[in-house]
Image (tube, rainbow, N blue to C red; front, side):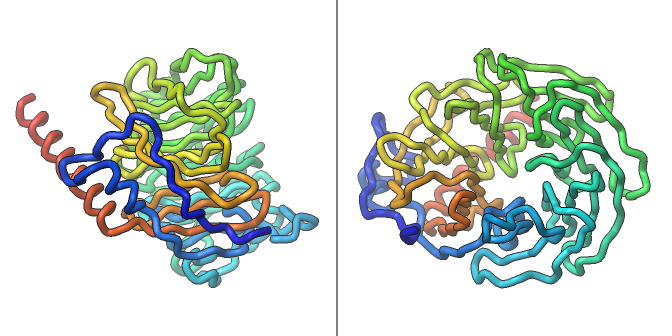
Length: 366
């Protein structure tokens, strides 16, 4: 396969407007793209990526004949392609992996129906629990302060394990339409995609043990979820057919559609949810940046980055510290790392400060 490189071609999307007062004109933003190519590594698509993209969890061979046959988790650095502190052994192949937001723990689920908890720094095994049917990607999710671990099980439901202390019993919540994707939008709220033609999202309140459902009002299954690493309640959903929804999960309906986006395979939100990045297959495979405004429920397409590849990324990861973006290509076993430019990082930092001041003002007024 040809090297995964961005072509020089960059095309402004329709309706471009300045990102903020910091930015002089849209054309200047266009002429100075926010991504700088860093590394291309030949690794199988990672099962999980740490919050700041300084570590990946690899669970399969790069040879498709032996894919998913190895009961190990290898920790790899995207920057150098080097192995991490440990290779974590399991009795069966590993199906799902999750890094804790605190960066200290790693959770793995293997095909022997066992969920393991590990110390990420030392590779020491902390605890394990028997949980049937945890054998799909994206089934594990940590709560924001890393005190809970949730498992979403297809056609079974969701379970929550309080891992501080790790000997707490697991609580189970039944939903026969549960899909594999699960995310915490607060310390006590877990959401998950449902196998339902109304594109519904399931909600679990851990504190009250209450379950509820919100509809996206579209006859299509949700196949991909992404959230902002700081504004956790802001979530983007990609449905079968490549349509994108995004919004505040505290509202009803929780998300609004982006009708101009088609053929999207995956998405990533910036930490404070000011930008949405999607991989879309229009006339050519591309990454597209969109500016979000949840007050007016509108999006502003900013730029399109054409990719010199035959396929689209299957996963996108936006670093919690706004330093980089990682693209993973599962069909070709490549990962691509991009650094965000200093100008764009400053722009994101300014937007974050403005939002903090706005929230502080709202708090004082209330």
